[in-house]
Amino acid sequence: MDGLVDDIILLDGATAPQQLDVQIGGGSMIAYTCPAPDKETENEDSVAAIPYGPDAVVLVVADGAGGLPAGRRASQTAIYALRDSLNNAMEETMLLRTAILNGIDAANQAVLALANGSATTMTVVTIEALILRTYQIGDSEAMVVGQRGRIKSQTMAHSPTGFAVEAGFLDQRAALHHEERHLVSNFIGTIDMRIDLAAEIKLSPRDTVLLASDGLTDNIHIHEITEIIRKGPLSKAIDAMTSLAKRRMTIETIHQPSKPDDLSVILYRKPYRKIRGNFAPVRS
Picture 1 (cartoon, rainbow, N blue to C red):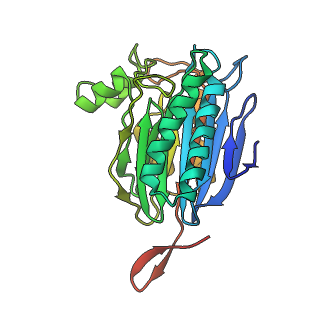
Picture 2: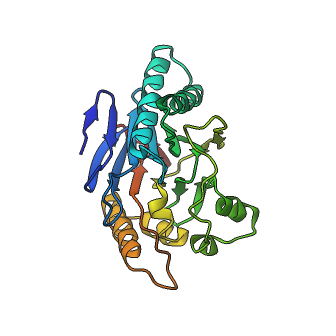
């Protein structure tokens, strides 16, 4: 497991599972990554948390494109370029939204500059105090789930099946079994990269934030994910999700999805204390 690398927490799980449980940005984060079962090449996923001042954190999952050269190098290059851009933005006291957009553009240019045909998805979540925003490129996923299981925010996969689900032509269950579910239409490292920027939302008490590569979302139904993460310790939730995903990857059945792939997950929550009938974040 990689620890603090300058001002970034980075996991890449190149050849073996890695997990990290830390306090960052005024909240609790647990992250996990591992290569696909029986995979002979390295894990192409990279997972990162980047602090942006005392009360903000940037969470990132990047999934190097399978079948393209140097997928792992692409995902790490993108994350480090984003980190460097955020460091420069902090010196200029730039708004985080502007800093992220500039950083994603820098990541795209950095992967293009590798000039080896590689590419990566990138899903970014920023959390400033209780304000959350998502930035999406590709088919990794971010979502916010309330304690009762209500999905308060969810990114859309940039893929034919993702667009079909969003348009109502395909339901989530059918999408997991669709023959084109592996296709992705938007990457970091391409000249036509685009950023799907969501509106801000305010986190409520005991909301759980999830980021995951498609190794999770191609093997576990959304309703299963929400039920697992909506309450209880984050460590228990991440163990349950990753165990189920890996089991599905290795045991194919007619009724359940099964797609062997690298697997990466971040779970994040803000702790709360009650003050005069209202909830406020506890500073770590």
